[in-house]
Length: 544
Image: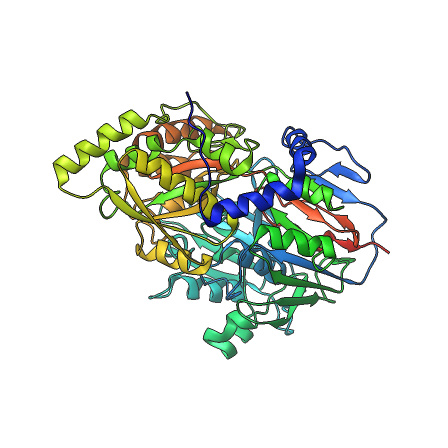
């Protein structure tokens, strides 16, 4: 018989609030919303990524909308360690050199092209002409080169430092051309300039004039070529962006301004949207959907390639021992966790890739088995003399803390003591990169192009390796992907899942159920950008 898990203490209070807002009808409504995303609803259709977009009116120009962020933003410097909210705003300010399409292919965005002239050793990036940064500085190949030089500089902790240091040479051939020579063929090289949750810095080019003038202060007053410029920014507080009147694409953005406010608590965020203080907010929690609709908001479902996970620091005890990693995985009942926190509406993970991933394979991922977990704990303790205990760092949103409380109970039943610490997202990112943690509760995204996130997170020779351990078999498969055409990489992705299922560098948990909810002021909303949790702010407008 499956045990029914319950929240205790502060988490129980939060759960009561969640239930009270939706009511029994809300739960039923949410259940109908978690299935396949459709184009049903007034003004709703599907975008190229398969998410719901909204067109209540024809596009209109002007006005301001307020966006609720799920985490505070401390800096907008692309070279800094940015959380998902910081990356989203940074993209609006700088534009991205490359991006992903709905199939996971790398495609040009700000850059016009990035092509190889041979087997993938020599590459040429072509840039648009006539584009200027917000401060009037011309956007040229020299600006790109200067940015890459900063990323790879000694002492840089940029998320893209490993990628750029791996380039043999690069230079500005002229104002619109950057040439690259690699030490060996690499057909995955274009992903270097496409932002992912794990590595993004090379995608966003700052004004060299502004960077030279501001130095370490650049993150508070960034200057890019994007559709919006920063009017004001208080680190950890509100961010106000205003439209770039000289933006490279005519006719957009539609808005005069966007204001970002921090609203980490999901219930406070929903209440602010209901009162009209927030116009747009993102959620990855299924129980929010019915509550938002009951509050009169429009919920726009989006495909989710992201999921909650436990990240293990494999460079130190106890997670340097695979028996302990496996014991933790087998002790946690994902079905029970899903029921307790998400009313059973979200999808427990069955491996490293979501089951709706185009290359998902069913691996021998450890199933929930508390008896086996207890046996592994006893063996680990007897062999090492270490106590079966660790500290989990989670973050402030209620759904994270609720999951941590439930996991603590589950692990205790298997003889594992887990202490809980609550940290802010920027600090957690810094500690993950420095190795100053035992386990973290976070989320990761694995879109159709999975090599990028896996390479920057777990490859043994990159500074962004957040597990702080390597696996030669995984490294070899990632090396093979570099010389394999994109259309032929499917078998490699299947092998990679098998290797990760044996190595267990982290624990996938519950797949996100992603949506944006919007208020009556929003006339048009494009949905999420392919493979991201961000929306394209250029194509949002106010309803007259």
